[in-house]
Image (cartoon, rainbow, N blue to C red; front, top):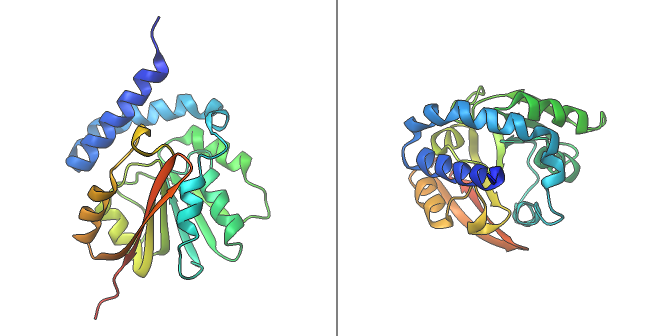
Length: 208
């Protein structure tokens, strides 16, 4: 019997490693990743464990001030965006994802009173001006470092959380995150461990 879940996890790790190592390869993986997550949308919320967002939340605790403009990259069915909107109710939160089916479910999951909007977008080419956000957050999401550096405002933060640490199908080791972010002007790194996972918070330097 074919273990489709295991195959999906292996493919997610392969796509992650390829995109981080050679971002130009992402265009080859993108249509398959989109289809994978479209198919998972109906069951995605049921796959989430109670502590899935523990590293994400713990990293948010390390923010020195409340951000006013927040982007949740790879928002899926909106769990990260909703976490952000509830924690920072005065902020404007945007969730982006490649999967239309995921975004449709995210909109159904979002109470009208929360200040969250959703857009279909490729994380490797975000449709936002430079410096648009004070926080750009990723939960179990492939990082595209050039775009993160571009849309984070000087003095703002980038967050990368992985719910199961190195066992997360989409995972980048903290030393690789630090290396790539340092090259793009990020400093003040905070490593976070919580529940089964880990996270990294980094601040984008303000030009002298």
